[in-house]
Image 1 (spheres, rainbow, N blue to C red):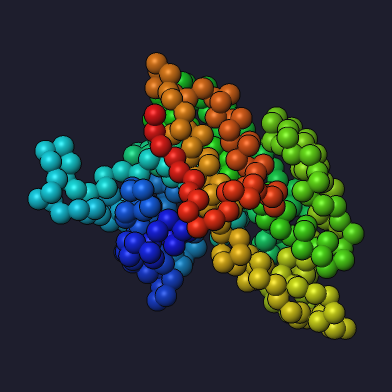
Image 2: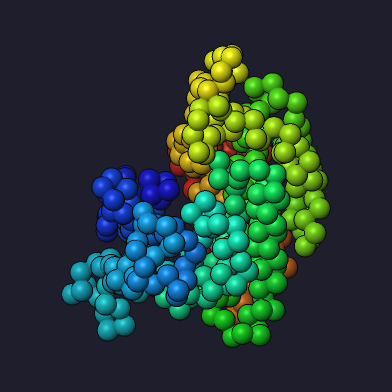
Length: 349
C-alpha cells in the first residue's frame, strides 16, 4: 500500500517504530501522490479505550497508547517556519480511518457491534476522522470450521448494517463521523480462492459470472454472490494441507496444482496469491485493494455535501456497491484504466 501511494518513488515513507525487528508498528507516507498523507498503525484488536496502555503488538489484545497517536498527529509534514498562523506544519488529523477487523487475533465472540461502534467513535475522538471504512473479514486459516464460517459472515453482515444505518445513528448520537463504508475484502478473497479452486479442478462455480448487481443491498444479505459463497464454501474450503500445523492452510487457497500434493497431502507447489493461510502476496493482489479504497473514498469526497454538511446516504451506498462490485472482485476492468499514467483519486467538492 505504501508503495502504491508513492512511498518508494517519492522517498516519502518514514518508519516511526517497529512492533518487533523488521515488522512495522507505525509508518507514515507523506506526501503521497497528489499530496496528503497515509499511515499504517499495527494493532491486534479493534481500537478500544479498554486496551489503552496494554502491551503493544505483537502481543495479543489490541494494546495501544496515546504516545502512538501523538507520533502520527505530530508528524511534521514541512518545516515549522514554513507554516502560517493556522498551521503548525504537522498532520493534526486524518480524514479517513480504515479498520481491518482482526479475526484471529480477536476471538469471534470479542467482535461485537459495540466494539465496532466504539472503534468508529474513537477514530473521530483520537484521530479526527470524519469517515470510517470497515473491511469485511476474509476466509483464513483462523476460520476453523463451518460454524466459524457462519459466524464470520454474520459479523460481516453486521458491519454492512452499521454502515447502511449510519446516517440515522449519527443524528441520534451527534457523532462527528459523517460516513461509514464497507470494503468487501472478504468478497475479494473469496473471488480469488474460488477462481484458483476452479483452476485446480474443484467443482465450484465461477464467481465472476454470478450476478453481483444487487450485492449487499439489504440486511438479509441474500444476493446471489453471498448465496454462492455460503452454499459452496463448506464443501471445499476446509480441504487443508496435512502439515501438522495448528493453523494449516486451505489447499485451494495456497496451492498452484494438486499433483504436487502427493499421497500425504502435506505440502504442495505454492501459488503467488497467498503466502500462507492468511497473508496475501501483495505483488499479486494489492492493486485492487488500494484502488477500491480510493474508489470508496471518492464516494464521500467526490460528492458534494448538502446544507447539513453530509452526503446523501443513498448516493454513498450506491457508489459503495459499485466500487466493491468492480474492484473487490476479479471482474475485468476497462483496458484504458490499465497503464503507467492512470490514477484514481478522491477530491473534496
